[in-house]
Structures are given as structure tokens and as C-alpha cells.
Image (cartoon, rainbow, N blue to C red; front, side, top):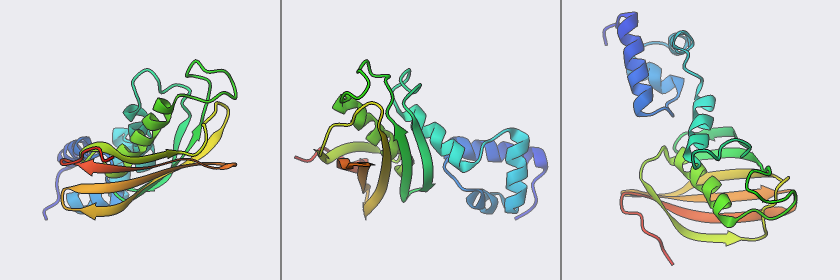
Length: 184
């Protein structure tokens, strides 16, 4: 692969990340035919955040617009296309008093955001099975984990688990893909 002029490399880097913002520096380096340090310098010059910050931004945008402030979702770690771990500080943004249970729809919204991050938005997500083991309350800090547990042609199965100090609060499986449908 021939070396691209810097301006062209910057243009391609920007376009590539617009198409898929969850690419690692290593993937970008291979795609553009340069070293990982060159990609890091280019990102710095262009003001493009590192993968972890891009992932967190996607997760927050996946949540309903206007509801991201105070939601407290923070991506802790991930492996693109395989799993994501996050922390959710449940704050009083839902019109629910401190220590009271939040609506189940808000829990689903967070789960959906994680599914979109782990699958890189590869298709529609349909809920296959969900268990609310106990209410999620404002003031809690939950560890969230989403993982692709099965890959089938045209679809993925993602397991989402929300844990608090008192144990598992929520567990669900989602089917993601072009042929996803709700299972009962």
C-alpha cells in the first residue's frame, strides 16, 4: 500500500470513523497502512477522542434525547463486537423520589443502549426474554454487562445483566439483526 499524503489520510480517517466509530487504533492503522502511533497522532491533531470515549458517547446518544443528563452511564471497558461493561449511577432524573423504584422502561432504555454499543448498531434489537429480579432505585450504583453469547447467520444474541450490591436486579436476552423479532 502506498503512503498517503497527510491531508488525504486525515480525510480517510475521519470518513472511516463516521462509518464505524468503534474501530480500534490497530484496525485503523491496518486499514490506512500506517503505524498505530501515527493513528494516535492523527486523532490528536483532528481532535478525535480515543475509542473508550467514542464508545461512551455512543451509549449516551443511544438513550432517548434530552434524558442523558444525570443518567450516570459510564462505559468502564469493552471489546468491540463482543462485550461491554459499564457503571450506572441511577440519579433522580426520572421524576421519582430518592430511593424509590424507577420505571422499568428506563431500565430497558439503558439495556438497549448497551446492546447498541456491543453490536455496533448492526441491526434492530428485539427483546427475547427479560427478568426483573428486584426494582432498580434512584441512588443505586449498578454494574452493567452486555455480551454477545451466540452468533448465527444474520443475527446475534446478547445477554445483558445489571448487578447491584444486593445481587442481580435485571437480566435480559436480546436478538439483534435484520431478521430479529420478539420471542415469547
